[in-house]
Length: 234
Length: 257
Image (cartoon, rainbow over all chains, first blue to last red):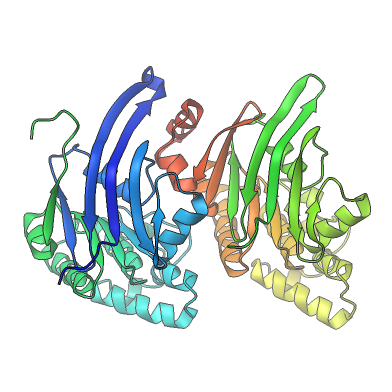
């Protein structure tokens, strides 16, 4: 039985207008449409610069499309994210949609375990419970226990990325957006992340991701979605 | 959802022939931290002072959803009632801690004074609460009886924050709270503020020219140029996908480290 989608996009348009370059307009997304249901993992594919990250960031409400629709199933209703008020987008991010980016935005002086626990605490979980789950995830992702209390500013790129993944997975979001979640990981850690993503998908998360690594893509994706710049030859 | 905590409609303030802020409207919702960014002279502080009732706008209204008095017109209140509001439901953190503290009395008294203003009378309780807040803003208890004149800039700023938050305000106005501090001192203060905002579900309006501070502390941004709001949105939207020429210039001017 196929599930109803929880994320649906139609007629989405996004261009960047650079005012310092004489209002140069760069169209990136034109008439994009897609839908993702629980248990699906949609992999965005296309050449570098085709707009995969722009699409993913637009889905998260980080980039602002000029027109079109991004609808998200949130608290048992459909919510429109294009042109949404900040508090609506924030509520969707808090409860419904997680984002794993390639880079961790480091918060000064906050230890890794609290960086990871934060989204769960914001959802109202007790601090000790959130910390236990954070430690479990950090352990699963191969971050040594001696690092858990330290701020991740001094961690390696791969370690920071795994902290970021743990932070995005801790709250069991029904929708997950993944931008190169395994980009700077070695094989062992990559496999750990792949397992976590598959578990989340099998538990019913709807996932949209960019995976340059073909093996990772094959392991997690259930469908592919081609992304191309407007006017580019397919 | 609930009502907005603070609503500005068409707020305009002129100084002589110069318009310092023009036709600013927005709603601040409970739990939101709104940043106002822009260069010096863009009208940020004038707007903040109008919102907090410290300056009377020439046009426009500011309404506040008071816990004690329901919806109030901030500038329609008598001076006495506005002062009461400012000390019971609001906080105001000045850039210069000397303006927000009483420099001639001890740190403990600076915090305790706010408590007495909202009706606390028991000396032991006041002293204990003051000590708790001093610890919360990471100032040693052995400094409780010292005057802020003996404090460093970073400590003064933390003391000012304790003095403002001890009365558990619903809304805090902050004017460049980390301005003029060393970077390491700034990081500590930012982390502290971030934790307190989360823990006490504070709503806040924060003026800063530092986009890094805005990124870390605010949910939403309004970008001001020449007294007008030229762009607004979620903080990450405004900083990662700036639309207005002025915002693009501001974001492009951040020095990478």
